[in-house]
Image (cartoon, rainbow, N blue to C red; front, side, top):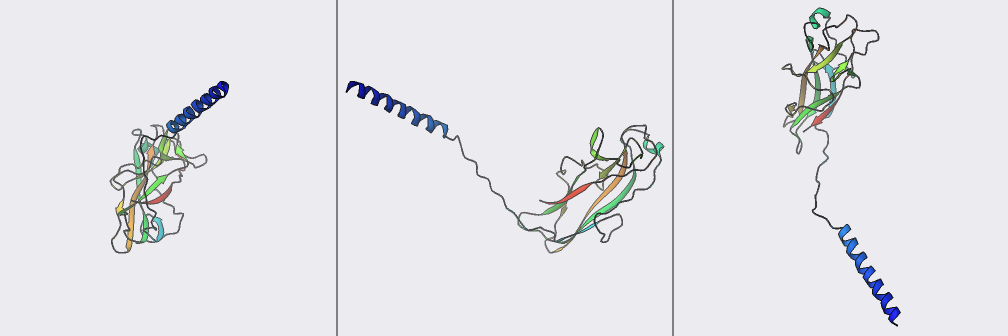
Length: 193
């Protein structure tokens, strides 16, 4: 009988210990609730991008003017050949929680040593030159780090179009830019905030 009592005490002690351990393992220091909302697109139709306005088909092509290598070789980071382009959105309206719209740009071919701009992908093309996307005030947009906090255009309260205006320009990566063709590709998504 004493042996049975000892075994029962050990089992009881083990059961209490296991219960305490499992209670500590599942204890929480606090709770965080996450909330959000999925809304319909604030703009019904993406019309296109182009240098002069009006609807264009996608993908769009922006043609920069010819520039001399000597112009770009004045200093590292020199911009030249500024060319305006726009992204046109139709049937936009503000919806719950959405007041602004912007484009977020990325490139799958960043320049060597500078992931903020498009590297030249022209076979046998110009060396040490890239293509940058700029705001209308000339500030460079980082193509791979998301949007700037002040980017964007307000959405209309009543349905209507929105035009997002930008510039493209050559950007020197060194002071030894060589002559040749220059091409680059940027992707964008339309972001509402």
